Image 1 (cartoon, rainbow, N blue to C red):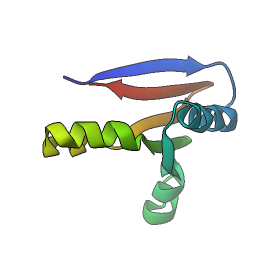
Image 2: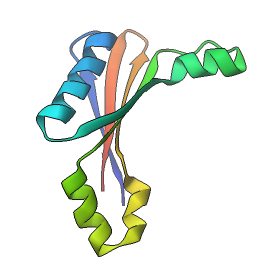
Image 3: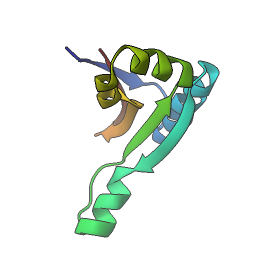
Image 4: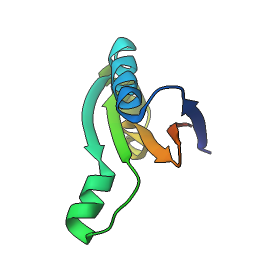
Length: 97
């Protein structure tokens, strides 16, 4: 079962994204991708959406350990984080399996 972890950031949106990226690196993860989903929705669908950014990260050592046990583990790779605006709040979400 996957549990979604939610936390309100005490900083603005851009700073929250930077802090998530920095924390990933500090903990030994490589940041694979940071993507502004709201921009994609605007470009591809012509819709306005509140700021919403994915940060995808991976720790190679953990990935190898998981893959050595089961190839099915790739469905939870990479580790994902989401930073988004919810009204006046900036929220950060991730998951815990």
